Structure formats: C-alpha cells, structure tokens
Length: 255
Ligand code: ADP
Image (cartoon, rainbow, N blue to C red; front, top):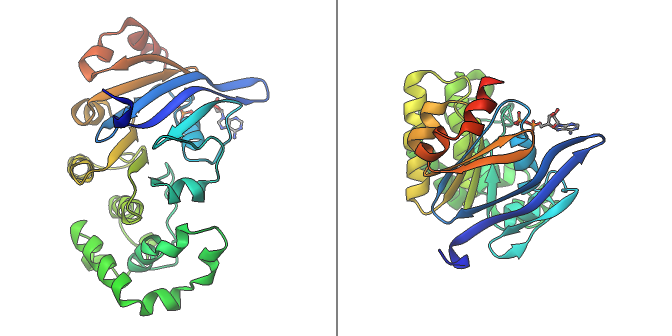
C-alpha cells in the first residue's frame, strides 16, 4: 500500500512515567478504512497509546503522524479538528445533559474551532439551531436512540449509554475513531449490536481503532491486530496470524 493509504502512523513512540516505560518504542501504521484491534494484558500500554495518539499525553520520544501531518503533542482539540474522535473506558458523557444535548454539543462545528470558542456557544443557542437539531435527529435515528433523546444518559441502561457515547463521537464526523474497550460491561446481544455499529461506521468511510478485551469480538471484527505487552508491540498481523504467535500466547498466560 502507498503512504497515501496511511491514515495514522505511530513512529517509535516511548512514554515514560518516572521509572516506568508505559510505551517502549511503539510503531504501527493504520490504513484508511481499516478496523484495527489493539489487544494486550492489563497494564500493557493500550490506553496510554490512545492517550498519546489523541493528544492527551505528549510522548517522551517518537512521533504521531495523522493524515500526513506531524501531530505529536498537539492538544486534543486540535486532533479533533483534524478529524480524530475517541471514547473512553469509563464513560465521559455529560450526565446532566439529555442524550440529544450531548449530540448537539458534539455536532456543533464551532466546538472544534478552538478550545475557548466552545464556551461561546451555550446550550440555549445550540437548542435553537434548527440545522443542528436536524443532524442530531438523524444521528439519534441511525443509532436507535430516538426514544431516549430527552433523557439524561445517567438514567439509561449501561449498554445504551455506551451507544450514546459512540454516537456522540461519530457525530463529530471523524476520519479516525478510537474506541477504548467499547464492549466492557455489555451483554452478548449488545456486543453483537456493537459489532454491527462498528462495521457500519467503517462502511461509512471511517477508520476505527479498537482496544478490546473481548477476544471473540476482536477476532471477528478486525482485519489487523496489534498486540502490546509491557509497553512493546510483541506481534501484529491478521487475527489468525497473531493467535498462533508464541509471544502472544505467553503474554496471555501470564495475564
Ligand atoms: P492498559 O490500557 O493496557 O491496561 P495502560 O496504558 O493503562 O495499560 O497502563 C500502562 C502502564 O502505564 C501501567 O503500568 C500504568 O500503571 C502506567 N500508567 C498509565 N498512565 C499513567 C500515569 N498517568 N502515570 C503513571 N503511570 C501511568
């Protein structure tokens, strides 16, 4: 594949917390239109990698190239503006806003113009913006959330909250979506629905990177998997390839 297809390139990223190397010379390339899995035992550096990619952490060394531009250490809102969105392991919805309002905030293009302008568009203004409300209605419909529009996320079942969080991330129209353990706490049926949602997100032209402990989901969903252990990439390849790697089997036996 040409470098044109490369949406994200992580080059030799190390992230050190005092004595601990949470990431140690990690490199990976994600192509446009891919669903990439990131797996590894607890503490292997997966979330730290997301935090570096999305700008929450500045790497100690190494680079993050997104859409051909060096974005290393850029603030999260600048990465959002460049077309990156993410979800968190622990939900970070605005619990006191309604589901619809959570989407309005995400859909508001002004919110990615700069960090401070965000504060200039209060909810009362967003609620009066008819184009914005139409877009929110479309997203609600697409994710089967219409019936929950006027409710606060914290009043909803956990599986629905997770879906709201993904809907909110996609509402910002990202080229790259980072999902941090989206299946955590979901039942079997909800995991099946999640897989469908992730595929539909990819089919709409987006690229997805997913950290996930549910191996069945990762194996069925991802074309390529990157395996971390102790902050290093110990294997990468198709699900079938990484599943038989001795280093991977060893890392998981020790988990
Ligand atoms: P994973 O997501 O694979 O479970 P993490 O990326 O959360 O792993 O953590 C990798 C290692 O880095 C762990 O040992 C963790 O304790 C450490 N770590 C993560 N974030 C910080 C931080 N902000 N300060 C100090 N250590 C951290």
